[in-house]
Amino acid sequence: MGPFATGILVPLGLFAMIFGIVYMAITSRNRERMALIERGADPLLFEAKKKASNGSGTMKWGLLLFGVGIGVVIANLLVSSNVMDDDSAYPAMIFIFGGLALIVFYLWQSKQNKEEKLKE
Image (cartoon, rainbow, N blue to C red; front, top):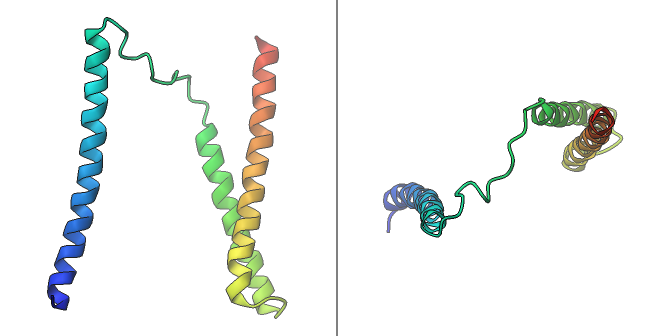
């Protein structure tokens, strides 16, 4: 095969694979619900309870992206001051500060959960 055939077949194969996965997920979910309905069970039995959105997902993503941004800035400072080389500084600082942001979110979320339990 020439480079043209590979350039066409790879994207088509990727699209077909993604389409197949989505199609199988939707049809199997529909079959499962139909089987539940035939047996007289509630089709919403396995769905997670949807509680009122309090913006915690947005807070998590905001903190994560903030941490990644701070990590890039700190890595740039370390590289420009010749403390670390750029091959290790950028990934290390991104993971460190992104992880710290997720830890901060976890602590914030547990505090929110405790406050909600005290209100009840």
